[in-house]
Length: 335
Image (tube, one colour):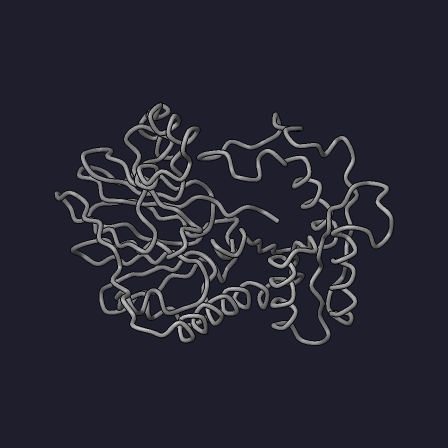
């Protein structure tokens, strides 16, 4: 289960400069606008481009449907209508527009470079490009008040700014970038809003699992992971199953604790869940194996349990797992 590689682009005043690291969906930066094309480590359906009427557009990330012509229109309604978590990029001979996903599953950043502006999905890659150091104020705020609103527009690196989720940034040669929120005001009842939320959740799960050869899920025994796992099962044909992993203390009696709830869910699924229990030992304790954590923009919430998570992914990869959607309390949605 390879991680998706960073991608990016921008407008430079003088010379083309590719900033994207290896990975499908990377943008080759040039003046006046970038060209977008596939690179390794992104699945084919997660990095698609289209040329139409003098415009070139790309959709990066899991996005429902096979037709990406909507990306050329690039209006607030069209770029948010599909299920999934994706970035839309549209370029013509006047400007480049980038639309961020609504849930910030794939955050994007900008920084000044080469007399222009570059953007990318990795703040660390942009910092390496400009030689930026760690933003001490961001670090202090992240340690004392991680939910502080000021952190939403900053990144861990000085001079690298975060583009808000559900926003559009417009780059034009010789001009400062313009960022604007997508206006998605909808009047609805509580029941109607709940139905739209359910539809979005189901669509997000279906978009991921239907294209995976062997979809996998967490199955902790709790409501969130169990709901996600069952949604995945609903969107697979009866001949296929979701491979689910449950971590539990080594030596725990059969059927005890959360493992028991997970086993009950597996029985209820009637053969649609291939269960993989993972016993945890001292080598999986929190804060162990931190020297093996790869460098990222900032530590993920799961970093403190890295050893456990690595063992979980190794187990699923050995079972042939190719895609592993995860929930974050169902409040952030699907990764």
